[in-house]
Length: 138
Image 1 (tube, one colour):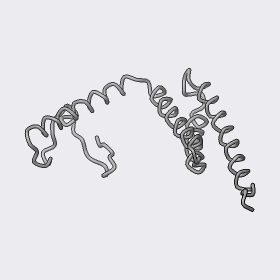
Image 2 (image 1 turned 120 degrees about the horizontal axis):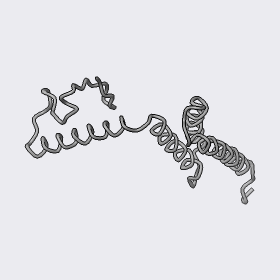
Image 3 (image 1 turned 90 degrees about the horizontal axis):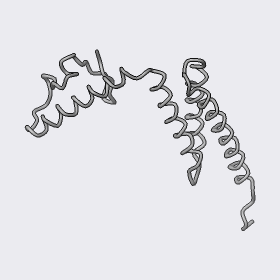
Image 4 (image 1 turned 90 degrees about the vertical axis):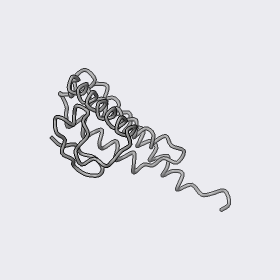
């Protein structure tokens, strides 16, 4: 099995999942070793909890996070429409691409997608209107 990190893909053995350090780990102080073991153990527990949850629940939680991301970009003092649009498109890819497979929360996600799209259009029109209005000094 492997684990993807920002530094690349790393092979993980079954022993490492249980909290053991890899043989090529850098020299650590005893305190750092204990922290590393504790973090590895916590990661193994988190993986175990994820395995117990239905995948649809995890996907819905991520979709809600993407919805929040879009909303944050739309409601900023200076909205970032390009960033919001990417988040909205990602949410649409999940909601529309997985139609019929997201369980009880699907209807709420469809509504959320609709509302964030409307907010995007409203914010886009507002930003376009602000750009076309002459400044008071003209």
